[in-house]
Length: 437
Image (cartoon, one colour):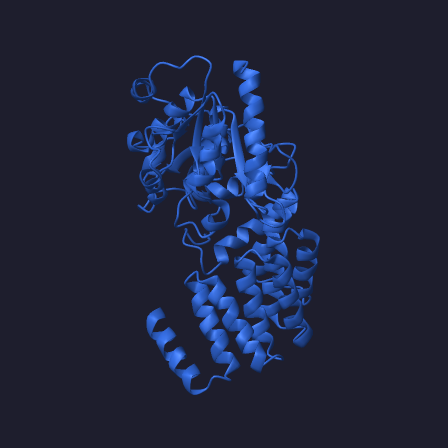
């Protein structure tokens, strides 16, 4: 039964039995899956009116509140579910997720320990523990748990193999490095490829077509298309397992990979951007990552917020946005006037890198371009959600993964307004510093 049919069936059931608490909660679950969080929350609360002792409804309500960014209410709902059923594995897991997304990492780890009191932890619990540990900088234990991702139902990469590489000497053997996750993760992990080559073997390297030119200087023995059957190899490893295999700590993060920017891309960028206007700052902007990424709704925002930067005297904005959110430029009426759209000129990440070289600063919400700019050594201001990608930690305005990146963080209320206010003030100061305005 598809979503529409299931919704219709539940609506008919509730019309006949409006005091069916479980049916109200199931409708709320369907609405949550459809992204209709306000309706989902209301349905769960209606279910609780008639079934206040139903722990499942409390837990479902908590899940919807987490997605709506209402952390305090979410944690209270999950606490009530656990008061009613203290040992229910699903409720313990849901509570751990809510605690992590609220930034309460010590409590997250305690909840996971409670859920794994029998001495075993499911892949789902280990994955949550990995995210919490990595966020607080416990890389030693975090990367061990990080491998649990390959046991998740949602994992779509290569399954675990008996030929897994342990990070030791290759002694002439052939290593297949396969990709997973997104473009940004591939750029992040590429810094380890030179270290892999030092292990003395042949390297077969999965690389997205969009990244082939910009990562063409890695010196691997063969570049493969992700998803295609690889030629014969001896051992294999995911690129995202490399930080753990090399024993990375906060003090030993390797420098970003050296990128290749072809002359043809540089010529295109120079022609597109033209001569520099004296006394101005060229600022690139990106307001959304891939819309298919599950957490993009939390990390992304709208073009409208970025137009505040155009109000700063001396600032000229250039959009590096790609994908469906790029349409916001046309809808805004500012394309070509307040914002120069570069997206149509970007055929791959090498083209984007060439454009970045011509810019003075990039201000953006987190996506693959942040990794690209950071790898180029460009100043990049990354406006990040309350609990961001783990490489950004949970406090401070710097990350060891990208020395030229400055972080502007949301607070617990997950409100973008103060983040942009701080960034505008910082931009005014940057213009004064660099142009004397």
